[in-house]
Image (cartoon, rainbow, N blue to C red):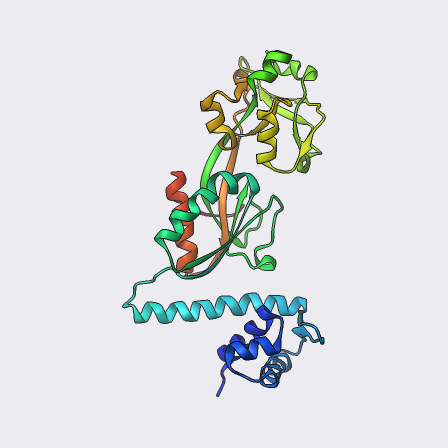
Length: 307
């Protein structure tokens, strides 16, 4: 009898634990039985999935792909059985891997975690914060929260929020260096920059009379790769910063940061999306988390393919 789901379960255990012995203990099998089942899969596929050593197992690139797909298949099998057993009702459960940018994650995702887990106690949330663009398949993430333009047409995206960019500074900085009246005044100011946008050492503006858009070069002595650090140094009076308003909304409301050059604001929008692999039957835990984000952010609820 073909029992590929059972073989997948054995492989997933071995791959996750990096050990035939540990997988055997989890599944109540001998290490040799686990090894033989993994070898059977490799023989059927005609490719090596793991590199065996005396210390631990190491997955090959093909093994990484097989693990990611096998995890999804086993999760869908388990969820299907739960739906049928529950009379068609699906309860979000299982491990949910989410990746978000540091700035958005710290200010908008982390505060939602207690409420989300209280609503869905059977979900195990695995949250990683990074400003690098990850590959969902390679990193085995269920959801990636990304800002800016979307490129991978094989994925689906749902808008979480949109935020206008704004130039801000602390009252202390403006008191020491003056308030820039026009974008040309930026030549005399310390402008903080994101180092992952190093090729764009300029900020866009719009003429308030002609509405023509143009750019001005910026100069500064500090670069950083994430929003929270940029915000912190701006609050400390290091210089001017241009960032998504969602980073600094509460600081503006409190008077800790002041928007400048607003008549010249280019009006460009920073879009935040939840990106996920498109499936006909999206796992309940993935849908629940995205719904919770959208509900909390108050954004539109449409789903669109990435451009």
